[in-house]
Structures are given as C-alpha cells and as structure tokens.
Amino acid sequence: MIGPSWRSRAVQALLGPNRSPLVPAQLWTGWLDASGQLIAMSGLPVSHEAFGPVSDGVANTTPLDCGVAGEGWAIAGVGLFDAADGALLVAATLSSVVTPDEGDPLTFDPGALTFRVSA
Image (tube, rainbow, N blue to C red; front, side):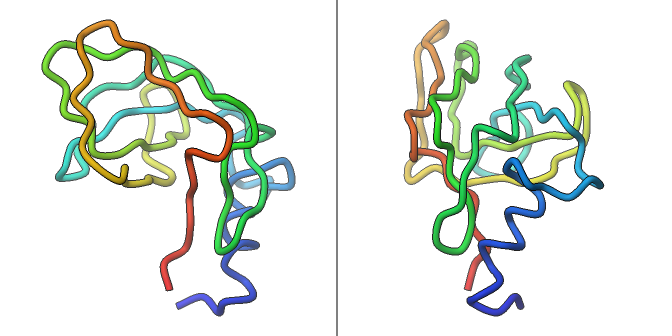
C-alpha cells in the first residue's frame, strides 16, 4: 500500500517529466483486452512530457495519438511499454470496452488517460 500523500508522487516516478532515471526515456503504447492481454502495439512512442500530476497519479496533458484500430478489436485497456516490442510498465482500464471499426483513429484528449495508484 502507498500512503495517500505519496500516490501521485509514486506514479510520477514512472511517468512524467521528472520520472526516475531507471525508467526508459521513451515509452510505447499498446492496446489490451478484458483479460489484460496485449491485442497489439500502436507502433507510436509516447513522451514522458505528455503527462502531469493529478490526484493519486498522472494524466496526459496533451493529445495522444495511439494509432489506428485493427479488425475485430475489443479494447478494454491501454498499456505503456518500455520498448516497441517490450515489457508492460503500467496499464489503465477504460471505463467501458471500446469496439472501434478497423482503421478508426485511437486517441486520447488531454486529461482522458489517467494512471493512478489504487487506494
């Protein structure tokens, strides 16, 4: 358990401009199904500078382009990975499963993607 006053700081150690030097400088997005398994990587990098502090975590402060949907996807979450074909660092669950059409753009408006430490 992480105490309430340290939750946002703990996530900021992984994501955000002031992250720990142990975390890779570049992150990559990937789409997850309801069981948390990888559907596909987006192929697009995400900068740490795209995130800023919020209560208990961080949220994107700029729009995020996360590629386009593939055929038959049922997206339940998004993950940030340490490389384009790497290991999962953190994941966020979507509020509901999204079933986009093939080729639909997958984006997050500012503030729409939040990574938090659970209470």
